[in-house]
Image (cartoon, rainbow over all chains, first blue to last red; front, top):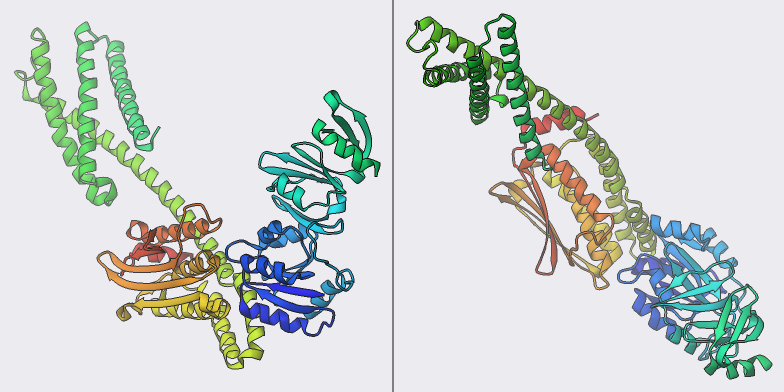
Length: 236
Length: 362
């Protein structure tokens, strides 16, 4: 498993890298001192795992994750930050406290799903198992795309509906559409992208449009322009 | 309604009500005795106006001489003298007005001297009574203010002790430092040993400052240096520090943790937030108003932007006010790309303030 260490302190990165030497399954492929560097390294090195310090100059760890289109596994690291600790606890995230206890590190690593070789193939769109990171106020989620049934734009924000959650995040629906698998996620109209796997019923609607009923009860209108493409996709 | 305006309003209301009450009682007693005539109604109205005017003059004299701030032995004879002086004026003025307004009535000025003297004495006694009430009110208010001030000082000291301890044992700093030392043990064992010594002296200082009201500036600077050395271990080239201290000030007493709090703020809210890092400059110099302590860091200060930093500054400001009254100041400014925090404290701290802190020490 390829790991990237993100921490603004050199000594802290060194210390963690030293601790990770004992773990054969983890291979530290790089380090980054801030969010910008981290984004570059992630794009270059495609790590499967991030060790991420929350307190960094410029953008913090959460802000970095929000900017990533595709989020690897994350183990958070912090010395002592009441705010971050509360976020970890509230959202049941995996975290380590500095100085890092080797036993706790081992426990955190053992909880990671076993890596398959070449797990992340290079591709333009995101797979269904890929996860994204969402944060709304104090709450945050790592959510696999397959669990998301609907993206709904609200001004500059997008409401993401999955399970019983519907956080509001600062994203653009058009950008999202480019990255999502077109065989699963369908742009129904100007305001909605829906997951075809959650469609229950389709009814004809005014002026050539369609009305889609989701398994969870929501109804989404498919515009006339998109209706024929939609029928095409659904007949497959 | 602003406070001074409200106080003025209360003063005038009290004046009018009290003098009206006095005049009514006086008139009533005359009426009961069957001595009340129509003309005396005007006389009473005159007394009312004279009373308000003369007692206001007495108040101005008391305020101008700051008699309420002085001891009883000093203030009372002077107030009595003023009351006598004003009482004489009031009696004469009233007599003249009386004679002018009521030419048909018995003249006071032309009458026997005793009746004028009686007038003077009664006015003097009236004003004396008024002055004593005024003093009593002031002492009562001052006593209450003193009590509140003492309570606030006590709470601030308690809070100060707690937050000192917490600030020095600032867990974020502590654990990061320990983590850094862990890495240094392999990389640079000598530096790791030194770091442990520095951490120890910070810990020891945190345990002892709670008990002390002042420390020599030099001692405070030693702690600041240890602290900065540990932060430099973490931030490395991102943290640059510079000291510019007048050596003759090193034995001057300063409240413990005062400078340290500012330096911690500068690192935590300034340097730690800059990807490229920056500089922290600590200086101490003599100033026309005492000692000028200043801590500058690279960055810009925007009020209210950084949660938590305001609380530290407010705490420091309150501490200064409680120890030095109005003789100390704390300002924060942006200057040439640096955030400059400046504290001015008197070189010889006021006895009262110091005693107050001493009394509160455990």
